Length: 323
Image (cartoon, rainbow, N blue to C red; front, side, top):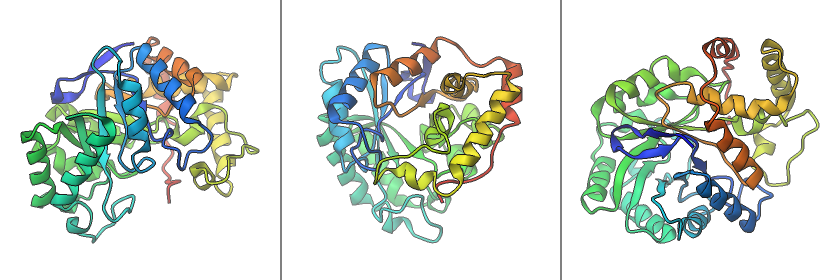
């Protein structure tokens, strides 16, 4: 496992982190707690030292599983979590004030609940789970984060940027009020490379790249016949003819790279994310030991060669399947 500096936090984090939404027991169906814990523990054994979870993931269930896996790890594991929007709207809606989403007392109380779930006195990174640039000058969230730092309950602070909206964080990054940003970044969504990533490098902001597989599109396993369990989030994400669109896009990538085996796509997706020096860590969801082992191996392969990166740049796909 290779490690990178998480911006000005100074944390040296594994470049393959662990995205813990999929082990929440809700929205992602099919993984038992037993298998999730085994995957988490195997990731830690293989050098993963950064885990990203959230209070909203199973209403704390993901955090509690993380606490169980981290207990007795024998070395420092950096745990990041998030304050869910009080109005439970993802992404943040224009025109809705911060008093309805992140009032001061709510941010403090949510953090304290997360600490109880995680069995920790401090969270390494606390993040707002949505962001609206209209809030940049409001005092509520800034005062809450400042007090969490002063009390020692949060070592660093950041935001999770709304789906496919990287430029909404540019003004915030310039203020120096946050230490990290979390963004969707993958072969299909490369929009961050134009403005956001250069700004993060300039201001020494850590970048956490989420959804490297585009919720499964870039695993090479989605076909037009793929089905998901009832209640699984992916039934919504891949509704209509979207699986057909994904298959055509992935096949186009394979053709351009003269590749025949779609099983190489996940490694390619991870290495693509790691090719941008602004990225501190990539956090794929991993619910099985086999997925953990395959993704961790990608760390040792290094970034994709420049000529491959140039080819992949042609496969940017501007769309939003979350809508």
